[in-house]
Length: 385
Image 1 (cartoon, rainbow, N blue to C red):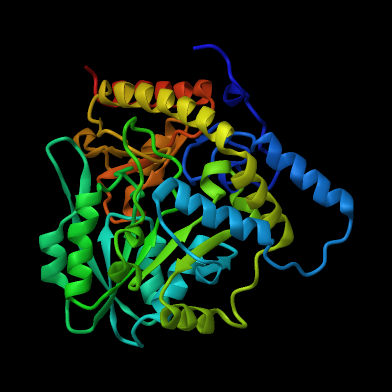
Image 2: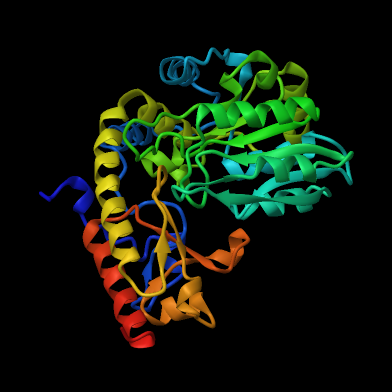
């Protein structure tokens, strides 16, 4: 593979990077939190320089061009017609999950979520004085893990008001097919639920031939019951600039969402808007190159992990996150074991399944290969072939 811009090893130490500071002053490679080690698109960097050079950083409204770009993007990519009033800009996606919990139902009502799942899906209901109902994923014959619709319907209680959903799924990388979303939407409608759909990884589809479908784009009936959360942050590695958005087409639901955030959740900062605008306006070609690189990393990783004793990695359709089954390795403390091997992974227990570990492969190939080699050496020592 010829060198690319994504092969560049950028030293992120001493930059207050959450990812790298966790293992400061150690030799542990951080492969955990979901940001990449790639430099953002040049168009984004140039736009930030230009905005900084202006020198005035006062209160900022959402740029009209950014609203227009998002509306056009939804139409172009998904044949989904939204209006500017449907958009609610947020300084992060996690606060959107929490606002959804607070704006749907009332104190003591129930929130359903698939599990395992990104940890804020499980903490947001509790922080909002809601009860949490976990719904299992089922592993299909092809290795895809999807929400168990029969278990979901059986788990719905009279006080259930909201389903938190993740598509593409984190962890695991499953991209839900249109027919699967249609079956899910029928359950949502039949049981009079609202769905908050985290679709932050929708621009990171790795499997050729697959396309993302926002569940709200299926029809007007499900659109009226959906809070869709998206952001450029994961795709363009600008998460630290804090710019996300919700699409809420139901005016009453949007009003409740806005009322709950008022005075608590701040507006997006001007550099976040600047980066998002540049990314959506000029970042598509960069992302196509990134996707090619991530596919190479994905393919290498799936083959390498499945060759290691005691580990299994199912196909990854989207995201740069690998959900590795370590159960057959029979490790007493998997997070500690891999840290001792020099690799910092996300513990599966944080996502609801301690049999797994999550690995972030959004990094230069050399870094990924070194991490896998360290894991290999540690496992072969622990489990001789």
